[in-house]
Length: 67
Image 1 (cartoon, helix red, strand yellow):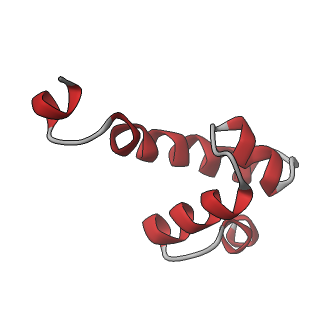
Image 2: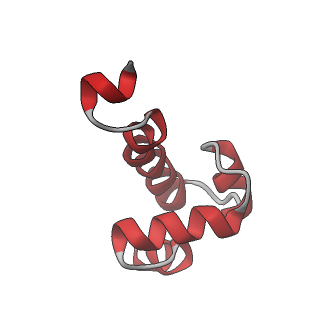
């Protein structure tokens, strides 16, 4: 029903929200990237890094160093 209404899965809908929270955490927190990945709902840091890179064009580590 969700997919039919919005044309996307719940995961696709939540991904930008979760990545946005993680970007704030990368800027403001000193947690490890693995801790941030788990905090925003990713099962592994490698999955998180893959999605992050696809969305932003950089890794979470590169993003953190940019601040």
